[in-house]
Image (cartoon, rainbow, N blue to C red; front, side):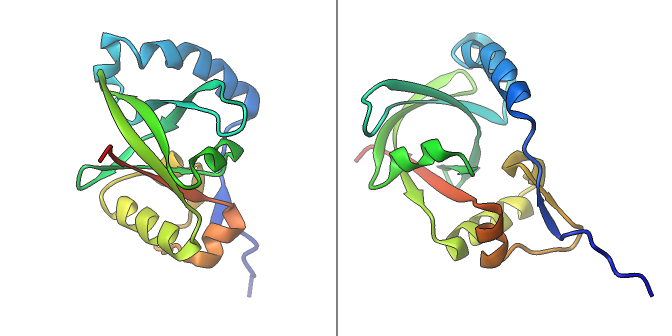
Length: 154
């Protein structure tokens, strides 16, 4: 009998250097007409919660019923505690939305599983998930993921 040491869920983030170089290239493209061809990515523009500086972050963008979602382990997500006005550039359009951070592991797992059921790839969440595995709250905690929900300004 052989024991498998492979985890059912692993972090699959690319190296930081790769992300930085790609962001330098993709960030301006997402604000141009070329963005119509870049379906899975969006550019978030928002003011930092404490610094007040304008931030521009490239993210994997997911939609469920006209609500945008970003699943991330990144520290910049804390800017969205309590809601943050954000300009989202996606597929050649700019939208003014409010992003709100949700760190509840069960809620995050439910959204990720729903997105996976709608043909999102685990890679778009920077995860490797074994075939047939359904994410649970423990997986979300172990992988340090949270979600930001983007909805229209009221």
